[in-house]
Amino acid sequence: MTDALARVRLLVAVMVTAAIGLRGGIPPILADWRSLAGRTERDFVSLAAERYPALVPWLPPRGPVGYLPEPQQTNDAFLRFCIAQNVLTPRVVVLGTGPDYVIAGPESLPQDDDRRGAPSRDPRLHGFVLYASFPDGMRVFRRFE
Image 1 (cartoon, one colour):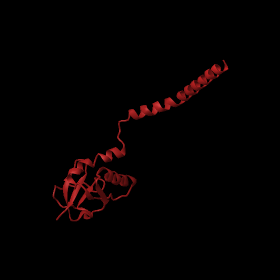
Image 2: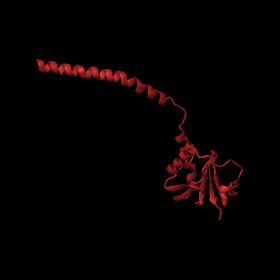
Image 3: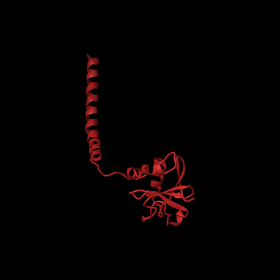
Image 4: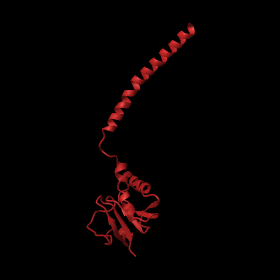
């Protein structure tokens, strides 16, 4: 009889402990889930990552691709560079204009009315022509031969 009573006590203790834990732990988890499920705004990384896949057909399939840095070096600028490296793999994205292809975002180069094939007006892109431009302000430049 004592063995059965000990088992019942243990079962009750486990159930009470589980009920108290669930009662205290579940509501915050549900509140977090509801707040995340109702979000409509996009995060910075997702928005930045969406800019680069459209550039892929205009870039070489592999090898180095230049990245025109933003004039003001901020955390967001560095993050955009890292995102470009990730999204454009297997290409190797490097800072600067050393490679034959260079990508530039709207933050690094002011918009102008250049047409495809027009030389860049930015002195950092001397010797490059506009190869492709996109509605979101992204541009691909190619070294003029």
